[in-house]
Image (cartoon, rainbow, N blue to C red):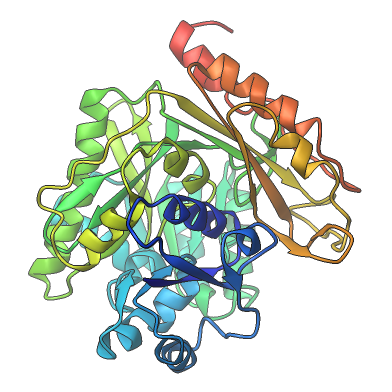
Length: 429
């Protein structure tokens, strides 16, 4: 089976790693576009394919006799890559462009949640700056301001005062985020811990995966600017059976609402939740596997990921029950100096082989390319150092032992990933 994975980050390396462990005979042949230095060791990278051009992807898939496509990032989904591939009869993991609006439009997602009866914060949408500013004067702060469309994770501001809220609204309408900021959603500020729940769905049945907890802030103690994620762990001690069931029910309700609307959702549905005093509420949806959530969820998966993906795209998830390792997973992101602001690339990475000599450790590449001498940095988030162990204490120890063996100029990372889980488990400070 020829499998094409679209994307080049840590999520795509984790997907390729998990698919490469499939027990199907013969094993799948992996092609990753554009891929990175990590995926190059698992299959073949293709760096000249425009993964956001549906027809270009179809031509490549047909020409290479691709049997299955797994879409990693959101932009190809919103661009309609899945629609074009399925029209050609190529099995693809991902929702249609219309269904991917759950991620591509905050207001669309909020409207679906309202009609599905899914708990979420109060909200309002605006297409004019003056109206949005007037609404802020009525509601006050804190408040959350979001560019409606895709803004590469940079269009969301948690404003703790009115001045910050006004600035965020102006930034959206100023054109900084392009078309994504032509509409603005202002949401109620909710307090609680944020957790992620990924699920597979064939449009009828939904199979939740293991929950994970991301760390978005750049520096220790959840300080500094927001990033794409500086670390993650799974499972999440604060998510008990009741909370898990409510989160899974919220995802299922959205899938059923989409089906009722004549717009079936198939693929991966990612729910970003906040655990409030009134129970879990949805903050956002993503239309694909999370990053860095995939780098802790997939290593804990004992079931064959390829079989689960095929069951999803072939509409036979009814009896799928993924099996999970009892081990915990902790991943630490190694970032370029200056990230999430300006940073330099092309820095040589040392110690990768020695890092993976630590028991239970896998290093997923997020922003790298291979050169003759060494792997080089290519992005803000460079590596995900993931460790599996029976306890959070051991997983943290293994992850940071491996981190200490890796070096590149300007490298920075958080030193407290997973500490919150230990506090949750043992009530320690």
